[in-house]
Length: 199
Image 1 (cartoon, one colour):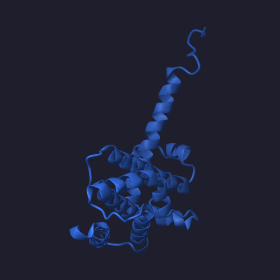
Image 2 (image 1 turned 90 degrees about the vertical axis):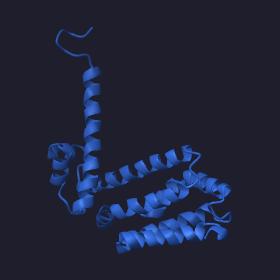
Image 3 (image 1 turned 180 degrees about the vertical axis):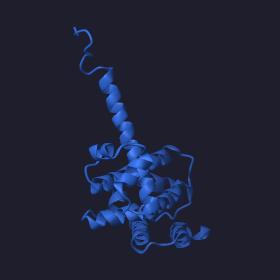
C-alpha cells in the first residue's frame, strides 16, 4: 500500500509525463519542419523552440544536437509519407493513387531541400532512392492496381518506376528546381509511364 501523500510508482502521473513528452516532441518536429522550410536549415534551434512554444531546454532534451533534430525531421517526414501511401493502398477505388504518390514524393523532396542539404554537410547523406525502398511494398500494390486499371503501361517494372522517380526527385534536390520545372518533369514522367494509347 502506498504511503499517505506519496503517489504509487507507475501511476497516472508517469503516464501524464510521458504523454506530455510525446506532445512536446511532435510539436518540436512540426515547428522544425516549418521553420527550416521558411528560413532554411541554418535557422536557429531557438527559433524552432519559439515556434513550438517550448523552452530551448525542452528541445535539447529531445534532440541534443542540431543534426539530431534535422535527422528526426527527415524520419518524421518519411513516417508521414509511409502513412499516406498506406492510406492510398487501403483506398482500393483510387486508380490515380500512383500518380498522386509520385507528386507527393516530389513535393516533399523539394520542400525539405534545405534540411537534406544541411544534413549532407554534417556527413549524413539522405537519398530519395533509399527512402523509396522502404515504400516498395506499397509501390508494388499501387503500380499493379494502376496497370490492371489500364492507367499505366503493363511492361513497367517497380524497380524502373522507383529509379525514374528517385532520379527526378534527386535532381530537384540537387539543382533546386522551380515549381513549374518540377511539374514539367512530372508531366514527362507520367506521359512516359502511361499506355501508348493514352499519351
